[in-house]
Length: 228
Image (tube, rainbow, N blue to C red):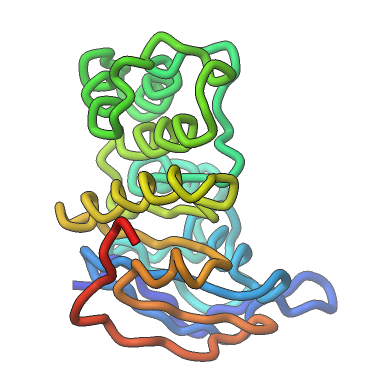
């Protein structure tokens, strides 16, 4: 079953065509990496998949629903209910503790539940840091907090933008271990990255260049060891 389908998707900004006729299907439970140099269109594609922008042309089907022509309010609701976003820059609220940063995501979705938020922190090994502010956490801990926040509403799709871009090798390995665990549990993951090492952990990789999709590699029979 496909959780995501893009059909002939293009994005045009004035005289610039950022994406050109992208057709792509993502199966439920798949781990996909999107690669490309700066200016290749990968961030534009991520923003369309993440319901932050609408495509100029083409259709986008997410969890069986055509989201291509939804208004901004409806797209916000889809993003809140179905997508867990993980950003390179974290976007944590500086004056809220770790557990409160997770609970704020619950608040916008349904109802804040501290016990459930603590369980989400425990999944990423941060239960002992729950009462710390973001500035009291290391970069790796902040990224794990972002993952806990993204998971709290049980999203259909986890969408991560350069999730290891600001991390050292040890913390990168920790984050990738968490992704492997989530994937083993059946989560659908899309990672936007410039790093071949990070992309190698995915089961499938697409590459963009000047807004076009160059290739679409097949699932690997044996994924790399998560600690490599």
